[in-house]
Image (cartoon, rainbow, N blue to C red):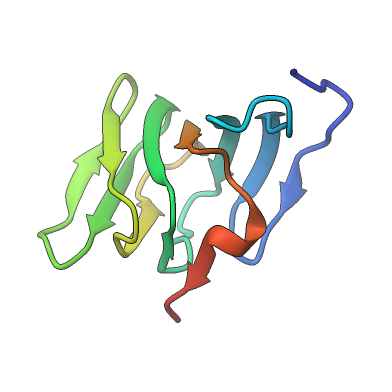
Length: 115
């Protein structure tokens, strides 16, 4: 269930995250809105869950595994397989905002920092 009372929080990943859906009652998925400020690159990390990013606004440069980095912008969807090293840099002048869908749902112990 969506909990509108959950605030946006700053994370060690170097971005702001607002949980939209992340509940024991819905173990198959979670949904969050992420915001990366201009000039910031998120912490390189990997998750033990499948992720999808759906970019709402801003411009960025995505890095997945050892593949070449690629540009992302509004309307783009990025699929991130489980355990794939990843980071995203905000390359624009405004916030980079994207939805992050995780399957199964995100739990803190599925996060591994690679820095």
